[in-house]
Figure 1 (cartoon, rainbow, N blue to C red):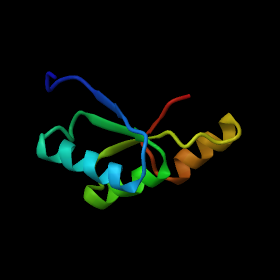
Figure 2 (tube, rainbow, N blue to C red; figure 1 turned 180 degrees about the horizontal axis):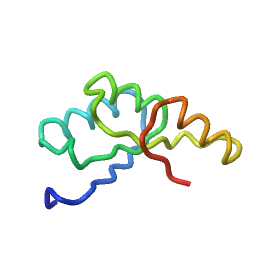
Figure 3 (cartoon, rainbow, N blue to C red; figure 1 turned 45 degrees about the horizontal axis):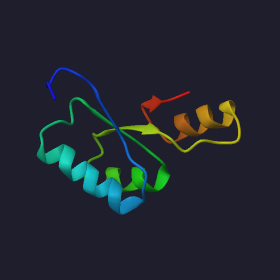
Figure 4 (cartoon, helix red, strand yellow; figure 1 turned 90 degrees about the vertical axis):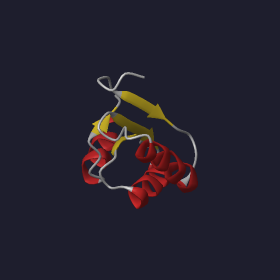
Length: 81
């Protein structure tokens, strides 16, 4: 992929998949353009590898307000409504 477009990397899995995905993004030199969209367990794995990787909160709550609040509290820079 060109280096000047956003990469929305949506993963479904736990902490180990988050770690593995973050390692690939790191090694490819694509942190500047990648956003890993995942649930809380995978996000913890991503953060253990590199806290500078952008994460989109995909941990859907019962309603939109709860989802937005959880995204803000979790310090996630991206959300998908």
